[in-house]
Length: 345
Ligand code: EPS
Image (cartoon, rainbow, N blue to C red; front, top):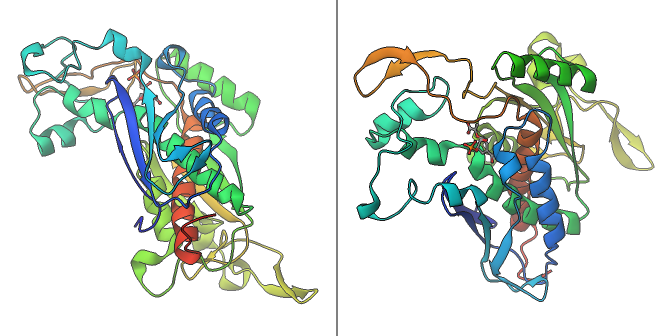
């Protein structure tokens, strides 16, 4: 999927650091580290975040690919150090001789990766799965997305997010009340938000093969964010109840240019951007690590029990929207580089 703007990330939630290597950036792109760090700060904020956010002050260190503030065409390496590692050095040691059962756990958290991950990778201590399945890894993805956003900004592309609903709440005041209520009862909350990218060129993506459709690529990138359960474009989630004459966005001319009065397609037709705003709607489920225990199974003796609780957030929808912006930015950066290939800015 990422043919031009490619990246890999590594790192565990309580490991030493999170790392990313980005390849495919043109040389000469200004890398504004303050912008990258402000995006990391946005991801840490939001009403309902947990105690881990009081420990971390995420900042990205650039260790390759940038000289005197500009890319030089070589891979860009980013590192975010986990402050909390200080408290986990023994438990997260990479050395065989440090083997310990401290912080091991065996009760699957329903809704999390524990069960399927432990079966797939044949791990007894579920911490081996928790550490990478944790949404902690989205910190480094936001740093990569910030670099992608710098490329998009260079081409004049804009980005914003809006919260549509959290629990039953539909405005800021109601969001907070819902989150307070969930927190009191040891519960968690999901929500719905939209990400809008504007001023995109016509023709990113393609209709010629299924795996080149930009809506498909964006859906994959957003759906794989931890806890995301639904992704749609424009008015796509309601398309089943509207007739064709009401759904499709009619075309008009204004000063010789094509204009539309509606954007039910969310800026994508035939798997390509059509010049209208790209509107991606996302639903995040409530985080599955609950203070109020859920019924589950203990894998060590196969008895019914209650789920493991580890420090968690009550609601991370705001953080999720920053991660979704970042993932979409990476897809768009790749598509821009495919359509306008260039070794330098
Ligand atoms: C997160 C860091 C994690 C969690 C949260 C997101 O830190 P810790 O496990 O040390 O509390 O706060 O992740 C989850 C709740 C989860 O289920 O994945 C972060 O940096 O966003």
